[in-house]
Length: 202
Image (cartoon, rainbow, N blue to C red; front, side, top):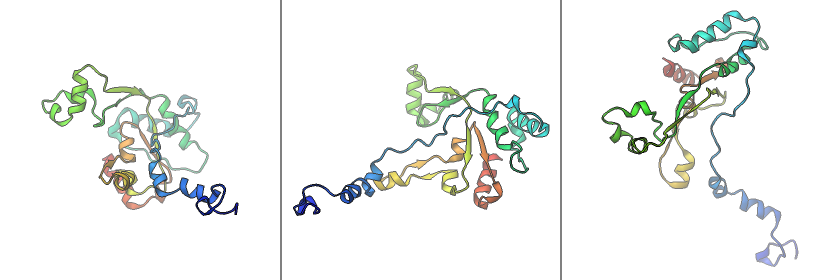
């Protein structure tokens, strides 16, 4: 009788039933949404890279003048392509990041329509509260298995199922705004994802 479930005369809950109760769809949806940000890391110093003059000049020009556009690095493994791109985060100045839900910076609240377009941020700003902070530039990497919805954003399926309402979620391109977007093995990406990246960079 000790092997039976409690409701059928067993003495204690079975391990299987406990796992099912802990791993059901409701339990999965009730979990906190994981942070979608980028883990901080200490990059290899850009000034410590020896050789690769053309690559270093191209990367420096692309961050000095955004009108240059992106940089396409081609070469075999182990020549420092990824290391060089990662190291750029250590030499770039900090960027201003909004703390408002609308993603608005203080200089965008100077227009006459700001109080109607961004009421929450406008109220905080007029009260003297900080609505932005400065942080270091991040390297946002595009995974090879990313879907188009992951790249450009889309409906949050978790919120749609759990709360029966539609909420738009920012994509990888939005998180890469004012940061560095790194795409490895670009030839393996789907054409629609490549087109979306090129449209955003145009």
